[in-house]
Length: 220
Image 1 (cartoon, rainbow, N blue to C red):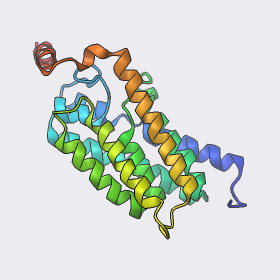
Image 2 (image 1 turned 60 degrees about the vertical axis):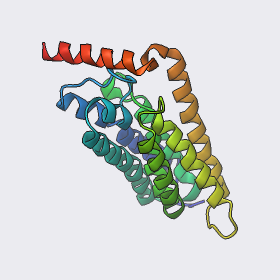
Image 3 (image 1 turned 120 degrees about the horizontal axis):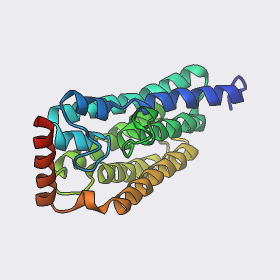
């Protein structure tokens, strides 16, 4: 424990992280291109929805910025003196900000990419390999899974845990448990959203019809 870290330090780090997480990147990119991500596709402000409803290029842009939000939150926390398991506090706050952005009436996305960025700031080497694996699944299964970013995150974390518990990995087990806990929270958050809004995740034909209607309304 860093003796210079106080309760105020934790609160400040959490507030900064929440602010970064709350930046409505997907919503903003969508609106700049004439699409309200909360009214099409999964109705969530995430990279996957932008990828599907706006364009792949813009989906990549949102992915990179959402990832940077999480990473920057951790870098700022490190600058304040937090280290190791202490960084789990701003990591959690960044995801919470992505879930409940005050800029979009407390709506958001799953936070998988934001957590990946935060994890990169905490244990960069191990997370890099996990991130590549998870991203590869998300991209390859984008049209085949209802929520590829979620499953990509799950696979990435399986790889993360497998590597982290290897001898001499240098990863604090408390960090592994903490990041895994945040990942599980994201999974339950997504499952809850899917169950509550089942109509958003029907057949592709239904989705395409809804998209067409929405875009016609936008043009009209």
